[in-house]
Length: 259
Length: 263
Ligand SMILES: Nc1ncnc2c1ncn2[C@@H]1O[C@H](COP(=O)(O)OP(=O)(O)O)[C@@H](O)[C@H]1O
Ligand SMILES: [Mg+2]
Image (tube, rainbow over all chains, first blue to last red; front, side, top):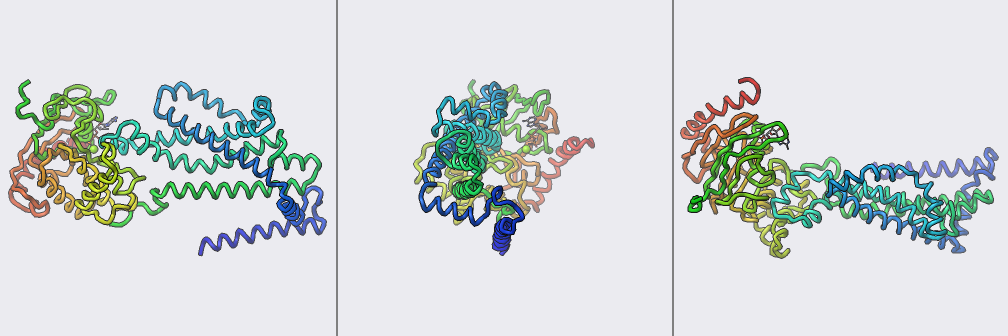
């Protein structure tokens, strides 16, 4: 009941915004040159998909996103595990990591283009630098927050180091890692699109930047809409995985069970 | 060294534990014979958990020695099962997988480990709850899973840290009776820590009293001659129980008062 109602309100709000926009332009309150209008945008998106020209760009952006997401997450988790379990390394590297993470990534885009060329590699590298730190910090935190009693219990039950990692550290960190994945996917997309925007020959970011170059606001908005839907779909996919892997976690307010 | 003839299951020799500048326990001497059920009582914060952690090998003593069946303890105590004071189940594993955990660590094949874990869950009254996660169980049920998790490993020594203190009175007496029933089966050596003197007397062969901290040590050692098998609810009403309770309480009371800064 509550959920259906929220959905209804959301739909109503969306319709209101779209209609308000459409009629503001049609009635001449705002200039179509700067704002385009929803019906034109819808037609443009339809044309893109009908002609099939958008698929190539979508595919490129998707590939860059997935590669950045996977490589960044894997590397971040592995590195986070290592640092969390070796106090010396973590103490030594701490300031370096903080400094690296404070670099705004946009600045790196031209350098990556220089190093890796105009193709996909430079975009993947950019997304990687974003995703890596998210995965790293969350893994590190997750390992550090392992309950000492649970850990002692597993040790008393005879767990060796590898078994502790597999049965205690990783599952404990998993809730942190998994809840960071959605953020990571968003950042992987940002890496890809910003990279494309700043210099590429394909991808959604490239499409948007080309349209901006010729003041084609309809294509700009069409690109943004496609991008938004793309991100939402990725996000839904990740939350499905997350829910599946975290069945053991209590729903809020469900703690305790029955006697 | 000729103590090998009949070595104690647990023996503490002049044991002390310090945390930085704070001495929690000092000069502790304690013996638990094989098959003996010993309860340790003392005011909260006197160092009972600290004592168990040293015997478990989780934190070696600052000075003194821990001996287990005649051998000096190095590293973790492989012959001891430890029932912790707070929840120690793995929240991401079901009751069954929690109970089978130790067997899995020991390399027992999964099907066999689960069969034995299932049998133990049934034994502690949890048949039908195998697939529940800890958060889906009540506090008492979680304690039962923890008990199964430890007992399935068949340890020679059982260390229990106020295992039932978080439970309501009825559940608690139920669990105490079940513990006694399980113990009667194979007479493990048990060191049972509690701040509840009645529980200690009802369960144990011997009650050991610790002084208030800092530098807590053993100040009293009382054999409990009550007949077994016992029912913890009924035994509390007997004259013999009350007499021994009065005797020990006379000593413990002062320490509790001291711990609360009134002595
Ligand atoms: N890891 C620790 N670091 C510092 N102090 C500790 C630590 N563990 C226990 N203590 C101190 O040692 C004393 C005994 O603690 P504990 O063994 O938990 O008492 P009990 O189990 O009898 O309630 C307490 O004063 C406690 O604050
Ligand atoms: Mg304690």
